[in-house]
Length: 180
Image (cartoon, rainbow, N blue to C red; front, top):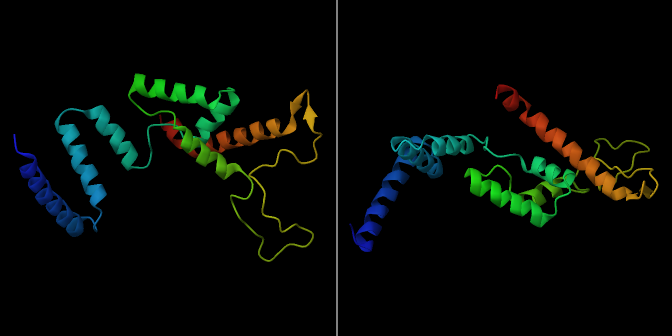
């Protein structure tokens, strides 16, 4: 067993070698080189499940659900933030995989659905069309009375928006789902 000082020096040398290799072979992408080394180390130790998950993350197809899908699930199953968080933690602990996304990812996904997130304007401007860009993906409130069957309309509109998000996310994942 090496002293901390010796370990530090060995690591410094290894870092230098990895950096040199990354610059020579991978256009300076140190992170990709390190991930590949880690992948090889996992496979060498027969940790194939972990290696598969890491590979999925590296290829941008994480093993978990899209944050917009998690948001739609949370909303449509009437889970509070704390209930969702408890479910997220439990699933992660039991399966060892992050299938559901943490709450901060859901908040980010929610922001993208709210008015004003996607600025756009018609070029050239259209006659008789408002130039207001403060619109969400779907404005479920247009022309509705303030409550329907004792539900406030904005709640219904929100659910409608989240359903749209769920459909969008599922359409994005359609090929992967069909391929299994």
